[in-house]
Image 1 (cartoon, rainbow, N blue to C red):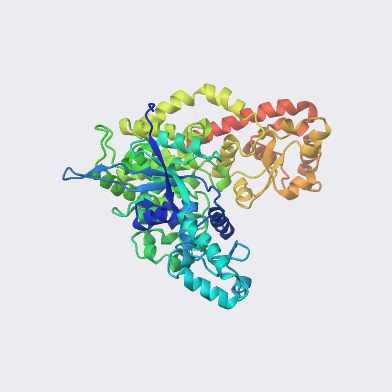
Image 2: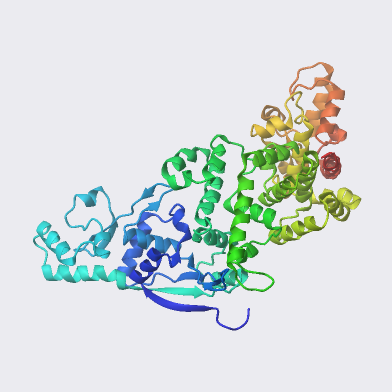
Length: 600
């Protein structure tokens, strides 16, 4: 970015700003979403204006002028990118506009004023019965009722009030609409990175701007190509995915959306409780965009929605239209019930039976991109399934999307344009999943204490896929334990290791974690493996009382140990063998992960 100033600063009267909003000159994208301020914050904003306190700057981004088909140019709207809540609060308190609550119901936030105390309050039942209050400032501030009439009515109810003093107080109230608010107007030719940097620098709270919010603002501001309804679809899908019970409220409270093409397309979510993949609006945008445009950077989508021609650097109306059409198609593909459920079926078939085993939304997102991309070109279903499973596992093993996910998305999707999916994945496997990875790097990666680490979660997924039993279980599988919210326990009991002087980072090692039935774990208590495993081998498998699970056969015990990648020598181990045990189990877990990966 050069030294040329890319913004202008102005001050506008509150009533001018509200006129801009009513005329559509300034688009408030957030107006379709639930209002996040509470009523008290609205009251405080009005009070600040009344007292002449600063209320912060509003930031708008001018949509660039686009070239029309006839060669002329059309000036775009200003999009509000910071200050949505303040402007919405002003429209609510002064214009009497409704806002949406969390159930998407339109509600009024009514602000009352006490002239005697010069105090504002949110209207309530007590104020309704108190003659000292003006119940609603909106009719007065938008000239629906004259100052003379307000004064006359108030004095009739409060005869001891000084009329001249009341007139002065009401003039002060009326003057709220003549107070100034600063506006920083960003140039429409600024790219998304520059706008993001400016936003961060001028935002006193240090808020990091999500580029997806820019996209959503752009979409919502465009009614010509149905962006406002597309924005609602994205929002409602992500909300319903988390809370299917919201469906009834949505159907009741958003009739405009119910009558659109999008409502039937997302209605299947009302009966859906699968939590493996609950996408946010950011996820939906990222997948739909990358899938349809073969680009990974949302900044590019912002430019395309503005009509940017990347070759000529001009802004063209045709590109705006083409972008909205393609983005709509991408979103429709994302929310399609068949697509979504088939993708989840593939995810589950890789062993991810519970959402806690695949915590990376970016891994899930790119897997879905691959699925949609290949399905759109009629790729054989069995090849799609294998490729997606492998890609999910590879991405977790290599932590592919943990650093710069957007840049990695952009790189990966472009490679899919140049090579066959199998070729590209094979190239990655040669480069990243060599024998050195499986024999050295992966065991080293397993040397951590996080039960949520991707390597450990992938190990659990491998156990679920192979349908192996929990540690010392005769019939209960790891999959059963994971799905029933079972707990991860320590093979070398935590208390035993603590009493032997080991630190948290040492006793909470991934290689010491295992899924085991709680009742078995309770019986083990703080005994070392030498004791409880020794009892199983020497007594339980010799026909004596079964204490630690139901295994009563040595060969079955060895199979159970192999299923859980636990060295057979565990039966004679105590604290002196702990480090040896960790090293051997990491090797066995890495070997299992390699076997699992190439079986996908």
